[in-house]
Amino acid sequence: MLKTYTYPRFEVKPAPEIASGRTLKVPVVVVGAGPVGLGMALDLQLQGLPVLVLDDDDSVSIGSRGVCYAKRALEVLDRYGIGKQVCEKGVSWNVGRTFFREQEVYNFNLVPEADHHRPGMVNLQQYYLEEYLVTKAQQTPNIELRWKNKVVSVTHGDATVTLRVETPDGIYSVETDWLIVADGARSPIRHMMGLEIEGKIFKDRFLIADVVMKADFPAERWFWFDPPFHPNQSVLLHKQADQVFRIDFQLGWDADPDEEKKPEKVIPRIKAMLGAFDGRDREFELEWVSVYTFQCRRMGSFRHGRVLFVGDAAHQVSPFGARGANSGLQDADNLGWKLKLVMAGKSPSTLLDSYSEERVFAADENLLNSTRSTDFITPKSKASKAFRNAVLGLARDHAFARALVNSGRLSVPAFLTTSSHNTPDSEPFAGRMVPGAPMDDAPVIERDPKGKTSGWLLDKVGNQFVALYFTNDPATLDAATIDALSNLSWGGIPVQPLLVSPKPGTAIGGIPTIEDMKGIVAQRYDARPGTVYLLRPDQHVAARWRRLDAAKVQAAVAKASGNA
Amino acid sequence: MALTLTPNFNEVGKTYFNAYSPGDDFYELLINTHRDLSDEQSEQVNARLILILANHIGDIATLRDALQLAREGV
Ligand SMILES: Cc1cc2nc3c(=O)[nH]c(=O)nc-3n(C[C@H](O)[C@H](O)[C@H](O)COP(=O)(O)OP(=O)(O)OC[C@H]3O[C@@H](n4cnc5c(N)ncnc54)[C@H](O)[C@@H]3O)c2cc1C
Image (cartoon, rainbow over all chains, first blue to last red; front, side):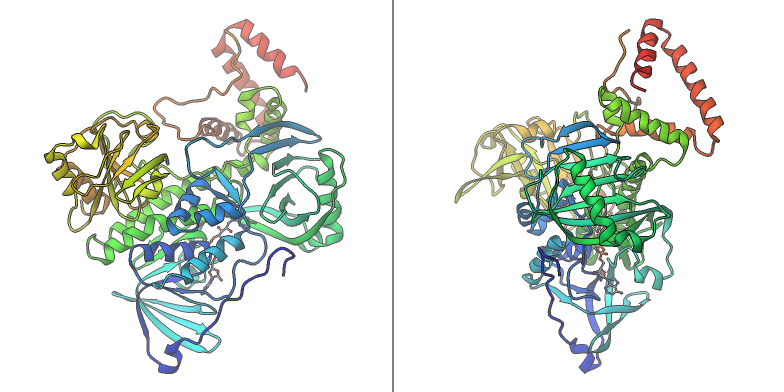
């Protein structure tokens, strides 16, 4: 029990298959109800698939783990229906202070870019995120959650995968067409299948302390390099919900975890830290303490036949930059629609290889960024320490050096520019929205017979292919254009047309219009009248053109769906 | 030539989606250049690097400013 949070206990029901002795047959099983497995289940049900989720526990994540959820993950959570809840409970911070030894080297104010729905990040204890995901899944008839159901063996056949599941009431078998493995960093299933995960063990230990602050304390992120109260190591402090602050002390590889965890050791250290900034004595209560080690590694492929690996089971990074759950949710985002197309017989199963291709690319980028942060924070040689300290010394006065200070680069989504499923540009476009880009958000107004609602571009797209068509005035579209837009679907894969216009206009031929009232959609997408964007169900750009050619759009749909 | 003290790293032909990427690219190259060297070897690499870059810049007034700045506060 924590002082600020009570862990929910989810109801454990005996599996009917134990009494009947029958093998349960389902199309998809997700193993693991962490943030990624739960996100995966919600994504699949949005695709209209029934999902069985098995988890060996009956509660949420215990103790202090994930803290920081970044913009793209929040946008994915919006699609799953809990983005608002996470943002409202989570805390935003804008001011970050960086200290080197005794001194504050510089501070920054991350004023969020205007005209995006979600901020760069919010901080929230992982158990809240999981609780919201579970509640959402429980409200969804297509998702069955089975708690205290532990997968103990996996048999990969030609046409199905068979699991043995151990429960408090006995053992039963499940046969499934597709298995999604979200069983975390240790991944028992990866071991059962004899699969490798390669990378670096990161020889360091971190003490994590959650404290409840008794008095007001600024919602800021503080990062120390080599502070007097913890020499030669780094320390990070940031705020979570409920007046709980999270403090990470780097301990080094040789530290004794049991010794370091003792309150008589931890409390004076925290006192010294809280006072170091302005000499004030601050009262706090210790909520949680643990010691962690980290790895930087990934599996060679995230797909093995009918088994797909997502989240920590597939890849793990150091915590600098908060890429674990954030990138895992983007795995789910990438996989859901692809599995649906394959299961519906609309795409060949090789489309699932593109899940691995694209998310391996993203994992490598995450590994690169977190390794770079790690190398900056913990220099491995005298020379790299000299450079690190030189950067920090110059950062006080010089912008170029501030840009090199790397105390963790905030998780951002990968631009899947190398994906073989993009259709390359054939005309020049400016800006970031290249094929493979995760979509930029923008404010919009939607009008329908019921009236007008202001909202966000990202809420208008997703879960299916969408073709955005930019026009100055929906009323002026000719019949041929309307006809072409109404017939973009290909091979049984629907493509929803959506007009984007600065002018309000009524829907024509049943094509909905979103109003780009500030012109920000057109600006961010470098669009002119006649510009077309094909968007994937996971809100990534698949292709774009300066003028509409239905055959080209259909060819791009075929390519994005693995059919060409 | 005035000394450039704002972020200035970039690579021709590369598109950056994050402002920190070019600086981090450079920093990684720098640290990797020192990988597996002894402290004495690293010192030699640094000395050579300064000489090579100084010659590349060439302009002595700029170098004078840079040298002075580097010495301040150490
Ligand atoms: C100190 C720390 C700080 C972090 N900070 C951040 C952060 O700021 N932002 C961020 O995005 N990430 C962060 N992370 C990472 C984040 O916690 C993980 O990436 C995330 O939990 C991974 O989610 P997952 O669903 O893949 O795996 P997990 O959360 O590990 O879930 C796996 C689930 O599978 C279940 N399971 C395991 N084996 C079986 C089995 N045989 N049968 C049935 N069920 C099984 C487990 O009970 C568990 O519920 C942090 C991690 C740590 C440790």
